[in-house]
Length: 128
Image 1 (spheres, one colour):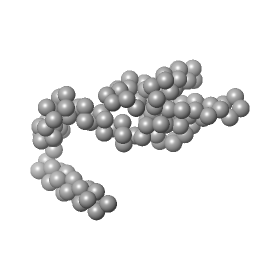
Image 2 (spheres, rainbow, N blue to C red):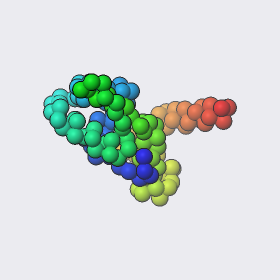
Image 3 (cartoon, rainbow, N blue to C red):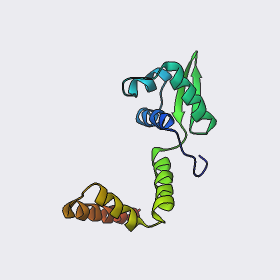
């Protein structure tokens, strides 16, 4: 994945389905999508675009292609969140969390829980 590559909404929906499945055919991916489901040809076209962008690959089993993600959900999420932090919050995590806390009316208890969970996660990372 090239740094800063952003997926369209349709591409993200297909990737979300593929990340859930770990691998899948056009029909299996389509089955994961919400109603109204796009046409099979639409899913196939989006998968071709994702393959050209380096997000998925496929193996052919007879006349059926089985698609596999090449980019992990965590890697894409990290890239998108880093861009959001950099482009909208001047690289300030405090500004970003403050914004979301205000927008979502988080309580003090919820913010304390966020801090506790973050500390626990950082401790786990240090122990690795």
